[in-house]
Length: 80
Image 1 (cartoon, rainbow, N blue to C red):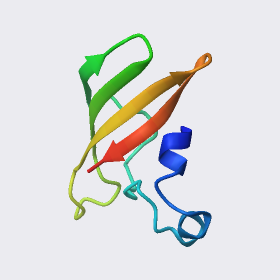
Image 2: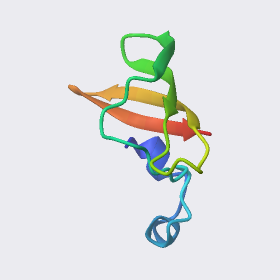
Image 3: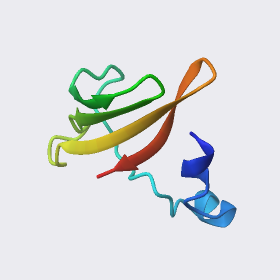
Image 4: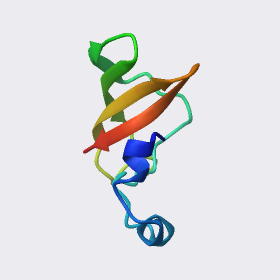
């Protein structure tokens, strides 16, 4: 995660789970349901659709912002 995402909650909120990242329990560990919204050399935004682990739960749809920091791509924001 980038510093931007870390700043969106206090350390106590992160420990308590009151975080800006929506919790979601996906089925599987490989995710193919994504679509690029935009891509620049150091910033990418994708729409990510996840199948739930439990069939009774809704499909998850998120907009995920990624930022390149050095040689790694880090999550900069997640919006449900």
